[in-house]
Length: 494
Image (cartoon, rainbow, N blue to C red):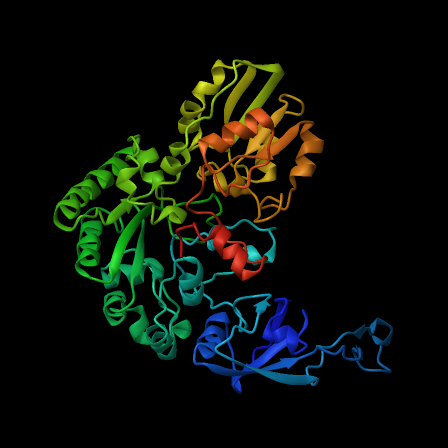
């Protein structure tokens, strides 16, 4: 049994009529334990459903330790788990009960079975909140929110469920179609692999032939690039259920103690990768009407190559994986600009070193406004190291080092540096703390150039999710799963 705390009860719903209240707990549906919201919806879809609800009752506290011992004075009264004995049921027939749960996974998140050479969790410095060190690899979150999974931790029951419930599409980290190379790069733990067939990537793609798959390849120099990349693209394009493939260069930090020796791409290597992929893209477009394989923005920036046009992204299907974010950001141009501001304003746009040059060109029209001084500042990552160049992994510490107190009126930070729904950065430094320390207004930018311009000119808060987004943004599992996966599944490092 996996008790599922209820967050809200819809007004006028069957659940409200039955007396269900927020804080109550769902125990079973039709006598069956329910592991997640997908299983819950699946049972409801069968027509008639009887829901068993518990109202948690506070349990008495218990004393720790053994009385009469030398440590007797250290004994504590600690709370025990609430009692779920107070239960009742209600039934619905072809009707939504009207329940929203605290989490979408009732049995906890499924953990990764791999020890990838390029895993970002293994490169995390110490001292962050514990949730950032969770290695998730859950096919249910892939279906619900588009997070990438490797499939290596699936059991036969998981595979059967994906097929039976048609959990399509899924987002799969392939990396390479060469099985020996994939094992060498990912190094799955045999004791964590439930089904030996699950680690066979070609077999899994073919087994899931009824499930649409969006795939990704995280490229490591001299490992799965060049001819190996060609082999992988050729195989993936041969499978009817593979919709597209994103190609993302490896992202590193300076915290790689006791990890394999890997490096980032040189400009020449990035250029070679793009040349290879462009050959495939032209061929696929001519033969299939789609380019199929999509390099990430980072590859273009590393190569010093211009970004593709908006049309070439074919609707931005892999946007959250860092494919087309800059082009999408640039699509909405600047709004009508005033000739001058009523008072002088100094603005610093802080971003990662990788995106700084592109952003500097994009905001050039705003420099024509009198009384407005704009500087795009490439912020060195003091937390993860110089090798980490993307904007989404900048922290409060980074901005403290990069910006002097009082040197601007407004500092704009990328929204990807903030925890979803808050003004907290990865290192739990809040914008309010930075405002006080740096003695200036600090706001987050917008998801488009137009939004960013409005923040600069009007000081309006932006609700947009990103600018200068990191394809390697670290997933924060401290928030409810339904929120934090949508926020941070862009890391491209499953």
